[in-house]
Length: 530
Image 1 (cartoon, rainbow, N blue to C red):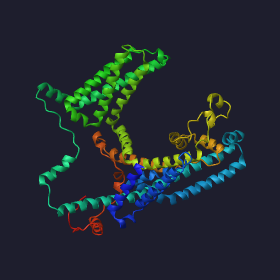
Image 2: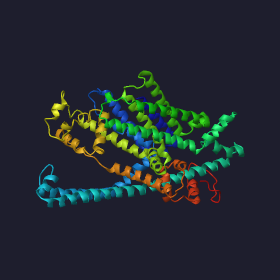
Image 3: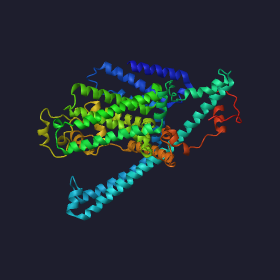
Image 4: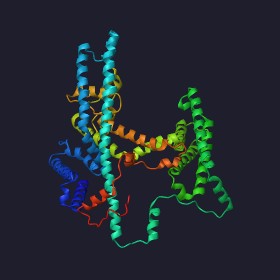
């Protein structure tokens, strides 16, 4: 109720700020009003009827609307998906005809549940049918569907991003025009200095009066100290790999393992990591040390390793018999080694692409979240309580059913009985290659169809490829590229910026002249701000 009241208050403020005339032009705000109205009606109905009897809550289906409405990029993506549907449906029609034709041929050739292997065993000539079906359908038609979706969606997204860039330039130009009309509130020197104050910079290193600390700062502030730290981490990982291989070859159980040498090596390297962290703090200072993300990553893991090793020595002494604790230390050391990835140019390219995907494709991942949420709610309505697990001895029950089925594989936790298990089930159906197991069990227990659509996967795959290709083209041309230059953030606009024409000065000024909310004296011969 409190969340609903908050949304209503926010909605009233938005309508008041933009005015009634603009409100009727904004479809998203009108949809906002419809969703809130439906939610209030459904909430009152659920109060009027006992909540235990009223299990179908329609307002749950409309909750993702608020996630979509607050993201401009997600709204652009949905609009592009809607425009792509006609071209996509033409390819889906061809795929449907392909399935129908080969289904008829399959019924004429055989009627087995597992038709491919028995038919090939009877006559090798039947392999022509399966090669044509799988080759033409999987490798041609579905790739054609991916290409059509990606190409058309990308084109519509380019138009949408071009409009966003035009609006941004209009806002910048209007802001400068407003500033030029008003009395200056800053002196010229302060105005020139303000961008540098806002731009994030690393704090300067501390200045020491001691000659020893000054010399230490000069010696350890170079590249040699960084290379030595990475070589130390590599040597530690190599030692762990060698000792782990020897332990596996010894064919001992975890309770029998007692590796004094690996424990001593880990203690030595953890002391070295701690010394490295302290030297970096002396060189850069606390603020300078914490201004680098890699240092924060190393420092957290080093402190965690040091605390874990001290607790192990205090409880178990050396040599300690608890191999599980040693494995935890080894995993943290290997995880700390991941920082070396960003020091190698090619691996840094791939790693920075993954980081950019997390940052810039959040809107498209949000669409996946919305799709999963809606299907999870619908699945709970339709299939909740349909599959009941045996009360006792599931292992014996699995021996009495057909091999490869839902019951034999023991997939009882994968159901629609609660929201968490519904999400896991949808992930298995959409990603894992055993979706036919769930399709079979729900088709046996219900009369409803249980299908999936790969369309959202194709959109996300295409955008992932665009991000990686952009990063590769930007960084692959230079052989002497510094790793720090890869840290430039690759936004969604930058991915397509080279293919988008810049808006002209006349177009920006004309749009500002036609804006009913601005009254500026603009000149097309003025300075162009971008």
